[in-house]
Length: 173
Image (cartoon, rainbow, N blue to C red):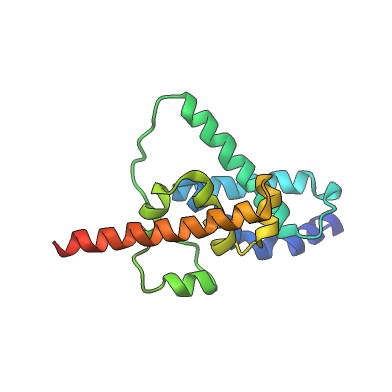
């Protein structure tokens, strides 16, 4: 294996689970999320020689998020597609803090609630809580001030909790 490919794999493979979670929660579909991760790695490999940032994870998340957004714009311009099935499973591997916190919660309920958040609140929550990016990194990715991102994440957490509480109350009726 040549040195460039080896360096690329060593720098990027530790972040594959983070990319999948970002793509899954920003893109809403398990199969599309896998496609986004694959396309992210293809684009990252093609541009690896030019990568000069301090955080490879943030660089990869930026590529992935741009792909998800571009896909969303394309899909908004065409007739809606209905998926044949939805698989809300996560990749097999080690569990991180977000996985542990969600272990007792029905993932499908959380995913549905996340889908109902305004896009900017959802992205702030997903990037900070699931991808593990700092508020400063998310701010740089979204082109917004750090305090705005913190506000969006706070509101997203409140809205998410309210949606889950409402669903629980509706179940009890």
